[in-house]
Length: 44
Image 1 (cartoon, rainbow, N blue to C red):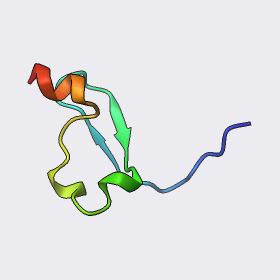
Image 2: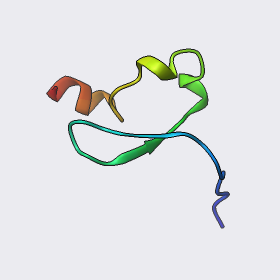
Image 3: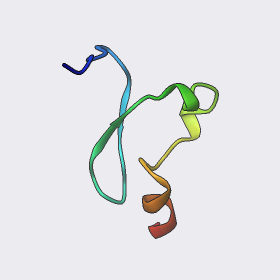
């Protein structure tokens, strides 16, 4: 069974309109993160 982490901040990707949650690799620059993936960033 997958471990669900409650209360993580979420944003909505402006390209695919899907919500994505905070990740540890974005801890230092969460304010600048706009896209859920490199694919969406390249389509913007």
